[in-house]
Image 1 (cartoon, rainbow, N blue to C red):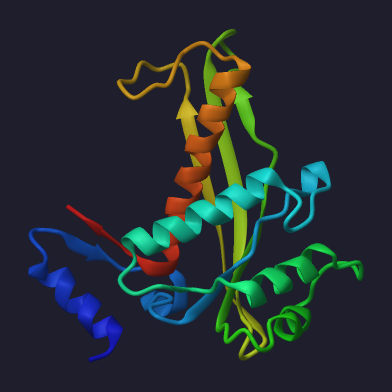
Image 2 (tube, rainbow, N blue to C red):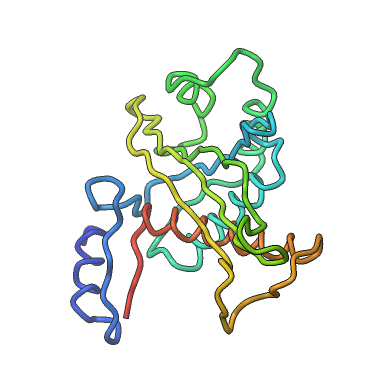
Length: 205
């Protein structure tokens, strides 16, 4: 039975009372079990290319972890060949990567889709209230169909935290360097979850 059909059956209540919210990607069919290469995101505002941005690396890891823990049957490519390919991407010196470049770079990996994107400069501190977080982090991403050599999907994910409003799950109301790192990590996890849901869908109560 096709994975999309399985997902449809599950959405009718085969698993408890949860409903399957279909993904945005691939005409709402999602990535399913198509082999997926997740590329560490770049950070143009800091002139950091793919593989050079610590934030971009962590976002990619969070996305892969989310997919493995929440998607129905994800195939996330890993291994020595993937490491070599990502090093070639990191060391690329010929300007922006075109779709045909991605296709050539990933030849031999067995990838169907490549997820790549960029993180915009984060905002952490409130501009209205001194000493409070009003954090926001945005990532733009694309899914490339490297078999057919085309852009298959483009979207934006956004994570927010704080805003000066009381919340039970607030890490802290007082910004400092240590808490900045915790807030930033939360935002990266939120971005990864949003991207994952667009790629694979998710179950909702």
